[in-house]
Length: 300
Length: 257
Image: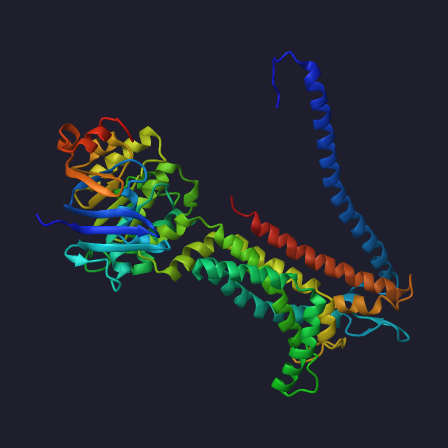
């Protein structure tokens, strides 16, 4: 604060210095995080773009065969990209309707005591390490999918979708629940006072009022799904083929990087191709986060 | 004249708190009835009984008898949707929905189906209802070219008028107003009061206010509440010039409250 006209310069001075120090420290902390992002991207780009000296961008993105260690090697990432897309789409189809319904129930319908229990359990769900979920999925979901559809292996895109849908749910529910709770009570009362039913008030007033938060919740859930590695590697079967149904084994981009990075020779095209996959993932997640951000800050 | 609203021995508890203690009152149609009293005296709670908005609060128990046009509204099987269509409410802070101006006014008719006085053998269109409702609150000329804009961009006074228009669109008979001017400046307050004055020929209006001058200016009858009890009820000019009860006199002369 500036006390203009107070004749006490010797007390103001140390305060100005400490203000300056604090401000610079905050500025530094802020810029460092940006710097790290930029450095990570530069590193990723440097390592990944080396691939395109041997393979064209088109052959990489649209190539149907991923045989990185055969001779000659083939670096078609399409099966991996589609593997991620299929698993993610499946997970969205499962988690979005259930997550949205769950958030609406917690925020709008559940009695007070139940609301607190449900919120705590959803947050607890988010705290379970993904490897543990993957392990549980491996011993429960995979056999279930196998016997349910009578197929030779349960390690399929569907099992991955179910698992990831389950993992995305806490993100979707908790962000959306916050968005719904933030809708002023007066909107609900206004709708009810006009003779709306509880459901009409939720659907026609509360949901539109919370729409940006709802969309952001879904986008962040998708971001969580597409970036997940361990659980999905354990239960999707890891076959780098272009999937035609959800009942086939698939291999996602993340699982490919995790599985092959250890054995790729540093500096080789194989090594570079894994970084190139990393760039693709980075771009996808970046777009998703950007979209979420756009919706979060759209109004007002 | 038969009363529009008749309340007999109304008790209300919020958990352990006895908020209304045996209130009985008869409210006449097409009049403005003001409810005054110090903060926490139960005047808003009483108002919210008349369209059963207290149902949305957990732990509220209501006993007694409220009839509107002879129809009992407190029993569990009462049709709340029909009740709230008939008995509209304006809140303390304007609460337009975060939708366009048009959608705000069209909200009620869209819920309940377009209805209203037939014109040339057909029901009025949504557009006609919106126009009529906005005209009734003197907003049409200002806003007719801005109907697609967000209602949240309007001034507070316009927002409050819009909230009244939103009610009128469902053809209510009773308007409950819970300190409708408390968020407005004095000029806007006067204009809303003029609107209330215009509307009273068509609607039964019950208004809660902490502003005694406002009660004196706009109401035909005044009810004074204190600590959950209805202390005195009668013609406004009499209440303000020769109150029968000592408590009423103390309050209106500003000795407390």
